[in-house]
Amino acid sequence: MKISTEIASASRIVGEEKAVELIAKAGFDAWDFSMTPMCKYDWENKCLFDNDHPLAGNNYLAFARKLKQIGLDNGIHCNQSHAPFPTYCDEIRGYLKRAIECTAEAGGKICIIHPDNYKSAEENAEIYFELLPFAKECDVKIATENMFNWNNGPAPAACSSPESFLEHLKVVNDDYFVACLDIGHAELKTLNTSAVEMIKALGDYVQALHIHDNNTQGDNHQIPFSMSIDFEAVAKALKEINYKGYLTLEADAYLKEYDKDNVFEGIKKLAESARKISEMMK
Image 1 (tube, rainbow, N blue to C red):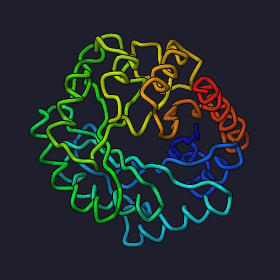
Image 2 (cartoon, helix red, strand yellow):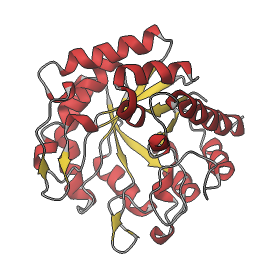
Image 3 (cartoon, rainbow, N blue to C red):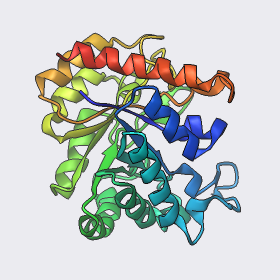
Image 4 (cartoon, one colour):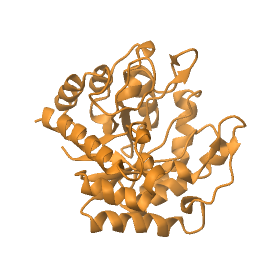
């Protein structure tokens, strides 16, 4: 199985260009294009901050091409991306086509776009129906993701149960609309499901992953094998459904303890954890 990781956490320390280079040198096969810098969201006031990031400017495609070339020069490619969120923000929804366009420009094949946590499958389908024609023009699949809300702990949201996730997928019913299963979200105890249950329920819909560890009480986004998730069971379930996608890490909290002088050591440890899961699937 090929392994990949998000670039957001390393980029906060060394910038996107260096992050892609270090991810390649650490042994990853691919990189996940994190596009949260495209829209800097003010969670308190529910609006966008002013933003001078290249992804927010007029030359966003040139920036995507630059990252793609850095990856290729170092022997890796972009496998997928993560669009900005939250999707309930109208201003952010205006950037989702840009995210799909950047995914294609970077060489990625899947763009993860969160559902609106608070909307039904039918309501969320309208968001995806609007984007799918453009996604098809770009030859990029859209993946929805299992989410959670917070009410003195993790609480149900769009796609947080197998039933809700399947409903979202079946209402849209399009080959270019697939599932990104977030392993950590699925393991939050108060959601009354598990990653294994989700994998088996979703089956072939699962074409992308967000892999990270947690204590089952909170969304810790830590390196696999450091907390409570049984990755041997997860690997077994993925093997049972004949999963053919990438093992993509989203352990973006793990590198917070590192700085530019030692971040490469942290990235190598992330790669080792992903390879361990890959070995379990043989």
